[in-house]
Image 1 (cartoon, rainbow, N blue to C red):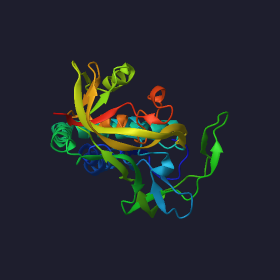
Image 2 (tube, rainbow, N blue to C red):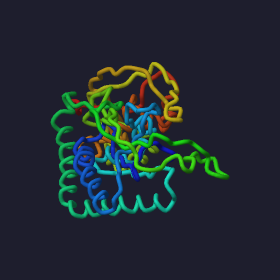
Image 3 (spheres, rainbow, N blue to C red):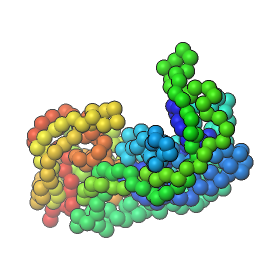
Image 4 (cartoon, one colour):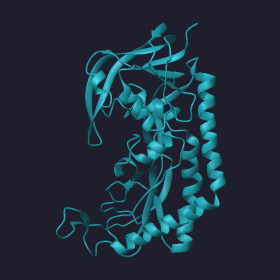
Length: 334
């Protein structure tokens, strides 16, 4: 990390994309993180805490993921792992300690983390297995009727008040001969102070859409099918023409939204029900009754915050008003 004002030797984070199954995410945040934090303190004498930053006022009022450039988007790899019903953790050291101290802090955290995961391996496997099973069961039970929903976007809300370690003085200075902003020597010393702040790190879904029984992708889009398969999503094909009931998305506008340093493609439009729509042999089929359903949903939904649309994967097929090429089906028409 760059220069920071908190007093932690290391910070850590896990999945915060709201579309992820909550089981693995909550296990890491509520159980694994506190245990590993205690172990680092006990074995190495270091204080570690959540990957976030304080507001610049004194005394600071909040401890925020947003200030640390963290996000509810799936672009961070640990968020993408959450969409796969898996656990992932990032650790970062602050910029002001010496290089040797940063290495020591990472060593301490990784050692404690590996000890915990080794001791709780069976428990961790059970949590992710349950998430896989529940993901598939929910699709089979609720997707056909349209009851099943998932989140397209989200934001961070408060978990309540917490005490954090803060240095009152922390003067910025570029490291000699570089463009890296560090801390002026001598301006961070002694023990950090304890300050009560608002913990703005709880991910909350803000927009949602229905999860279909599956998606149908035109045969002329093999690149999309290949990218899904590269993400371990099972994609089949129709061996003969078939009719499906479902929903199509009418695109009324395509625009770019600058977010987190990127111009993200954003679609405006509405869904409309369709009955007995016929699809030819060779059409790609994503059956959502699979453990990777949350990822498939987030990647393929036309209005997901940073799915395939957002990152331009579908640009050749969504250049202007018209029909979104991927169809959400509820059931095969009878």
